Image (tube, rainbow, N blue to C red; front, side, top):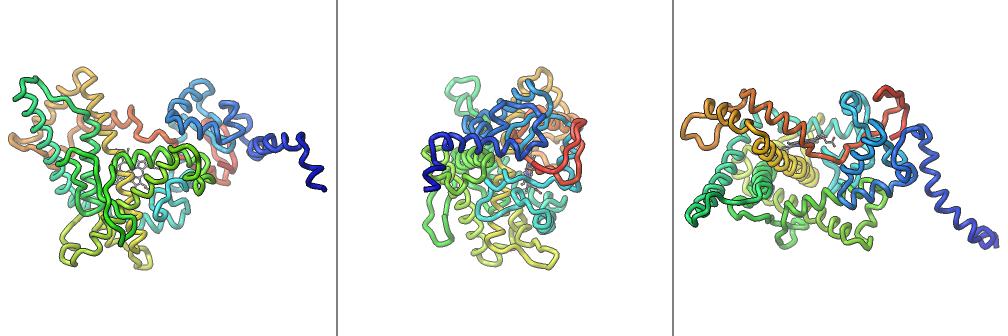
Length: 406
Ligand code: HEM
């Protein structure tokens, strides 16, 4: 009876009003920050931009219109000011990763998506030796091997073009930088390259559980899809458990991609852990370093956590490197004079007949370093924002004081 009298058409109309008004009111402290009007009331504005693959454009346009601080969700402010970087991203500032990162968890939380400060410290302690100068030096042999594979393929393509009377070979360099990055990270994090360079193809082995049969999946495409769908769900992580039931196949395919990617890691880490002991000790790669890692109580990573961390390295280290390499080549060729100057510096530093230079030969070349830094500056590998939660202590950003909230 009471329910009947409450559910009048007028009160039903109030439900969406309350639904959108509550998040707006709950975040009153940022009500004076401008932004697209819908974004202040609902996560759907940002989610929709992500779904269209134009978040970076929409947020950039909003900054051009509204200034360095823009409200892009009811509880989320985008900051476009370099002076804010050391405040937000310093290790001691207490700005923890937001719930956005929950959307990126698969298998279990890894270094990248762990939000708890103590857990992140434990993981860093277990994993940090992996990136010591000595370890990186030992990784070089795997990078050199795969770079040789790339040069072999590009030489083959050039020879084929020339022998058929063409002055050059045409190719999409991003594909080849992807094969290179995946084969290097596969070699380092999973004990063997995926074999994309020799095949000239995006393909990797998948196993959903240690005992399930082996299938094959395009790892690069799977990784891209996973990034797009996780970045979209990250705007509204509560929908993650239901994403595969949404009518839009973007979400269904994305959830499948996340599972496939985890399957790739499971297949590779199991093959290594189940290999004979003498094989395990032979390689000096990232997976070997992760297997040696110990936390402050002397505990190693268990099989599942090890797999999650190896997968973290694959995700964090592959398309970041390939996109940056491709951007480097693009800007170096496009900007007059750069390639010639770089070539002169490299020719002077690398002895004749050396096809793939050693790190020692090129580590102190100032112009090369500047070209890489400038590439990283003008081509942002991640356009997702990397959101953090404002700590309880007041923070001064772009001249404004803020306390608590996201
Ligand atoms: C051009 C290449 C790269 C760029 C531009 C890049 C950029 C970044 C950025 C911006 C973050 C912070 C992410 C966040 O706060 O959400 C990050 C984190 C991370 N990156 Fe990279 N990265 C690159 C290459 C690599 C490689 C090659 C590896 C490993 C093989 C790697 C492993 C990681 C890991 C494990 C984290 C998480 C660290 C933590 O939370 O403590 N990255 N990277």
